[in-house]
Length: 117
View 1 (tube, rainbow, N blue to C red):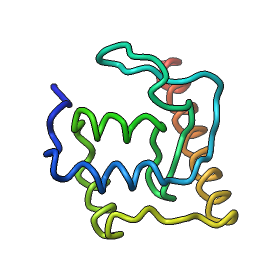
View 2: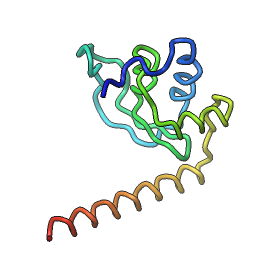
View 3: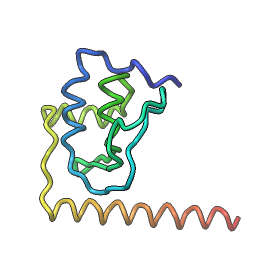
C-alpha cells in the first residue's frame, strides 16, 4: 500500500507541528535517513509521545514532505487537541513508559508461547 500523498498539503503543517513538539522519551545515537531517497540526517534518532501515541522523530518530516498516512484514531486525537501536542509532566511520562514496557513484555510472552506450539 502506498503511504505517500495521503495527507493533503494544506493539512500537513499542523500535523507536522504536533508531531515535532511531542515529548522525547527515548534517544539513540545516529541520525535517521529518508526511507524513500536515502537522504542522510533528516532527524535525530529519538522517540516522542503525546502520552497515548508514540512515534519516531522523523515522522514530522515524512508528513510534511510526503504526506504519509497516519491512523485515523491518531488523526482524531490530534484534531481533538486542536493540533497542540500536550506537554507531559514527569509523572505522566513515567506512567507512559511503564505502560509501554508492560505492553512490550506481554507481546514478548505471547511470541514465546506461539513459538512453543
